[in-house]
Length: 87
Image 1 (cartoon, rainbow, N blue to C red):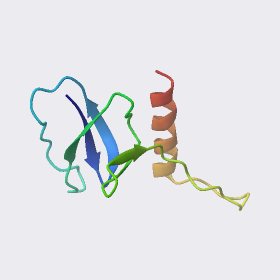
Image 2 (cartoon, rainbow, N blue to C red; image 1 turned 45 degrees about the vertical axis):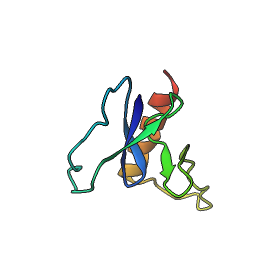
Image 3 (cartoon, helix red, strand yellow; image 1 turned 90 degrees about the vertical axis):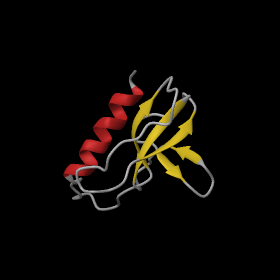
Image 4 (tube, rainbow, N blue to C red; image 1 turned 60 degrees about the horizontal axis):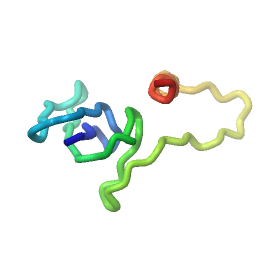
């Protein structure tokens, strides 16, 4: 079975061909990590809606201010999204 490892409803890992449900400790900031069964379309950086059980792509909201500078976290997320889409 394939599992998505989630922290704060964001996919931080995808584990394939697992015989048992994986268990990870908390993230460095102390947030719990949970395992949710998924299919092979789930990739790093996707978001999870626990109410519907659906995974979806993260799409940042458009910015109207031309002087906007993305945060360090936003730049990392964008890079991860790019890297996972170029497999």
